[in-house]
Length: 296
Image (cartoon, rainbow, N blue to C red; front, side, top):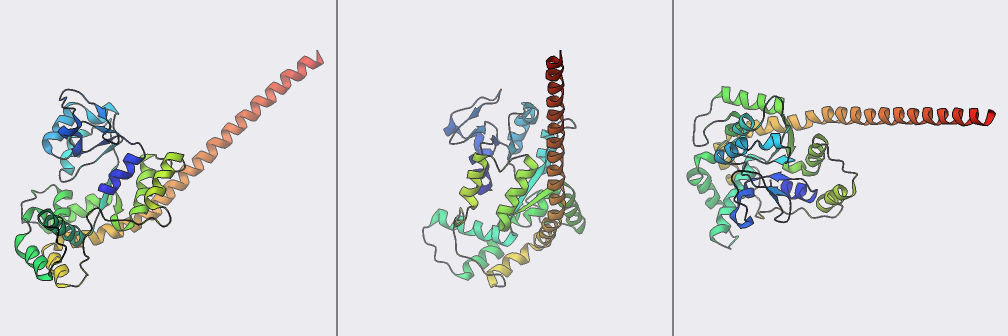
């Protein structure tokens, strides 16, 4: 999510993120919104924790119209239920990462937090996957989409069906492995015109030719099929199945989004044609008026 947030900060979008209540930014006002710029425009709410979301609801974050993008995780259903209403609806955009890659990144992030040594043994990550990783990180995708307790180890096939249905019916899919295409899709649904100079510059900054895409948490790769990969995948069976459905949906949405984009372009052309016809009519009327004055 870090790259996504950085892209939209670059584009000048006002974000609601957890960091919005970070004390270092100095705004502790609990009774009203404030937009400040710790390098970008952020609104002073926390949209990740339930406490923060309830405060955002109290202050009518969505209804205020002050924010372009609300970033949340973990409390997805809670956020939807408390922030939106029938008169103020949003578009749910989600950026998904392969469950094994997410946990590998987490392993190295925690490793780096206590050591600068990037050397590792496969047995270390296998042991971590089998014995150490917290239950709340296991099958996290399914738990998030269904609204299950993260600490619960119990997931049913019915939960799996609900997760897949929610994903297919409610979410514009993005994939970290298809980041540029995902951002293009998000931009379309957010009404962002990439042809505008500052938006174009931001896209080129992150996706331009020759730009090296660095992981915000660089670490050695774990190969699919390795002992480490299999150890993580075994404990995340539901998430692996869900992610396969997510990738399929990403590709299925391609045609749908392209048809939306074409319809939007056709509308723009139609509007332009109508405006041109209107201008021609005005010119013709002016010519008639001028001609009548000449004939007088």
